[in-house]
Picture 1 (cartoon, rainbow, N blue to C red):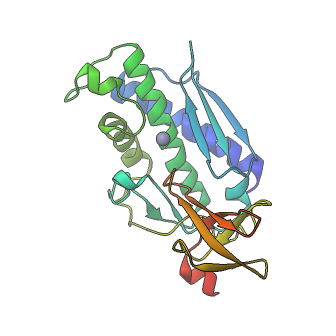
Picture 2: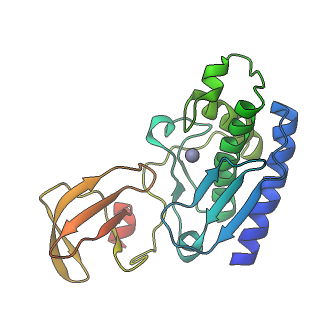
Length: 224
Ligand SMILES: [Zn+2]
C-alpha cells in the first residue's frame, strides 16, 4: 500500500462512517477536514474539535514504512473484543480501526455541541471527553459495523520493522525495566526512565549522554 492508496482508503472509510454517524446518532460529520500526512509520528491520529466543522489528522508514515502485528488501543479497554487491541497484519484493516476511533471523537464532539440525547447517557456523560464510556459506546457501534467480527486480543505493539523509525527512536524487544542495560546500535545504555504517558505509544528514555525513545516491538519479532 502506498501513500495515495492509504489516503484514499482513509477518506472512503471515513465517508462510510459518516453515513453510520447519521444513521446511528443523527449527526453530520461529513464535512470534517481530513488531513493525511506521511509523518512518522508515533501518534497516528488526532481528532480536533473546531467550529463549525472538525478536523482529523492522520500520520501514516510509520505504518507505511513498517510491517505490522496488531492494532493497539488504550489500556482501559484494550481487552474488549469489539473495540480493543487486536492482532492484524492487514494495514487496510488497521486503518479502518484508526478511522473508527478518530471518527468516534468527532461524533462525540457533535453530540455534545448539539446536546443530542444518547439513550443510557446523561448530558454530562455525553460531554465527557477523551476515552470515557460515551466515546467507547460510539466507537463500539461503528467499529462492529466496519470490522464485523470479534477481534482477537493482541498485547504486543504495532510496528515491527521500524528500527530506527527516526533518529532518536529505536524499536526494542519489550519494555526493559528501569536500571537494566539495553543495546542500541551496538552501544549499551542504561534504562533510566519509563514514561507510559501514552499507552498507545509508550516510550522509554535511555541514558548515556543520549536519550532514546523506545518503541516496543514483540519479543518474537526481535528474535527473528
Ligand atoms: Zn482517541
